[in-house]
Length: 389
Ligand SMILES: NC(=O)c1ccc[n+]([C@@H]2O[C@H](COP(=O)([O-])OP(=O)(O)OC[C@H]3O[C@@H](n4cnc5c(N)ncnc54)[C@H](OP(=O)(O)O)[C@@H]3O)[C@@H](O)[C@H]2O)c1
Image (cartoon, rainbow, N blue to C red; front, side, top):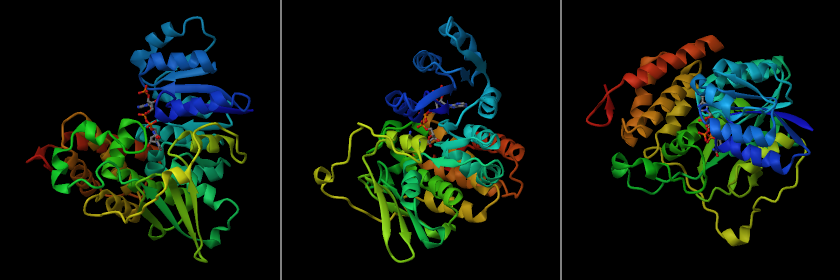
């Protein structure tokens, strides 16, 4: 039986992970669960899965959580530092990091630093601190098990293959809800329109990232750190049906793909069960029913986020971290109705111009950079609705 800790258990990935664990209760035991503010949901999960510890990041919710879990044999901790602490000190085989955004970085760092395997859903961790996390994982013999569907697909395609025979990684993306919308109307995109992903049901931040296609940009950087190929060998392919989750091209011209219905329970279960596979009764793929799979090249003028992310990756140092934090804050400003959809990319560009990329990628540096970039992006005002001042 594997002992599992889950950070961000109340979110979309966390909830799906608990469904996987519930179906495979002989294989997995939950050691801890964490959330930010949703105490009722966290308490309900704790009553079902009986973890040793629960952590609520927002300390103002601790009292409510304690009263909800009165009489339950569970230790209750509060504060972000307590999440880092359970990642470091708990007795787990695998920690699934399903926190959203750069706030998940410390959980990833502490997991690998303490030699535990990291099932990584929080892609922002690798975008922010990929070099540091890889170095710590190597030093402390921790493995990084991809959960993102594209990276899980590449991982599965690479099993049994030699590194020297891999030529290119091809990340697929649906193209999001605005793949065919007239770009001249992007300024009037509403929040509900941007939150309506054609194939996947996910948390708000990643859904907006999919609409701008920054999600694919972040995934290129994530793939770079997971699979160690140069940026020029990581491609993006638009595949509106989201059935092929990604592909690998080998030196002999052969291409392998991994397919499945768009359901995050499949890659989550694979990360937790690897090197084994567990049977499941999730919906299975029926290609005859789907009939047609289509592909397109990404449109750079419609979605500049991909080249922006590639440029940050090529610049290196802290540039991807700046891109990531600026994107996150710009997305939150859009969701708070402070900027239009077309304001997201200009805010990121402004932050990348303002903060020089540095080579110091220690955790302390990245935490302080996160604060500075956050404040900067929050302070930018928009003139004529789009251009930051
Ligand atoms: N959803 C998907 O299908 C999917 C697919 C691939 C990759 N991912 C990646 O997986 C991660 C999670 O995505 P999601 O869609 O599951 O997000 P989500 O539904 O918004 O859930 C986020 C989780 O993180 C917690 N959280 C938020 N802010 C926090 C903070 N400051 N400190 C500690 N915990 C915090 C939330 O707690 P509360 O509930 O209490 O707010 C919640 O448990 C993201 O990095 C995303 O890019 C998601």
